[in-house]
Image 1 (cartoon, helix red, strand yellow):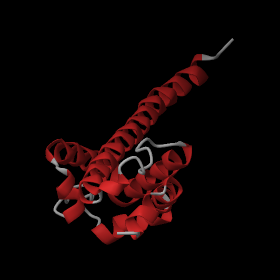
Image 2 (tube, rainbow, N blue to C red):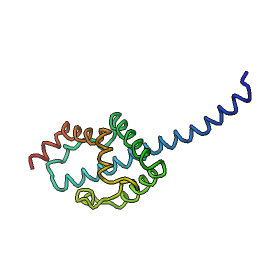
Image 3 (cartoon, rainbow, N blue to C red):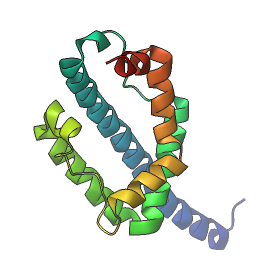
Image 4 (cartoon, rainbow, N blue to C red):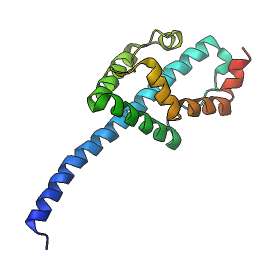
Length: 152
């Protein structure tokens, strides 16, 4: 039989941890969906500029390694700007992607995605350190898209 003095704090701890885990999962899911949307816009713009890429670009969907890298990046963002900063970044990304065009991403006029308190260089460092950039480059190379781009 469980003693109420032990059970009550345990239930309280679970009540606190479960929502925190749900928020973390929710942020990762949002980050994944937004990344996939941005990648799709980028690919659309690349195909408009380099028609030879049609059918050469890899899937925009995250696989297990990309999800691990995304989780790593989110954790690094949270260490730097806190959970509220990450939520604000994801909210801004959602708003920006909703109105973005492929050319916005390719020309550099798309500026969302840098959490307040971090610079674009710091975000790039986090993405590099977590392997997100390397995984994307690997996917482009494996699909043949990198070779098609270099041939231009």
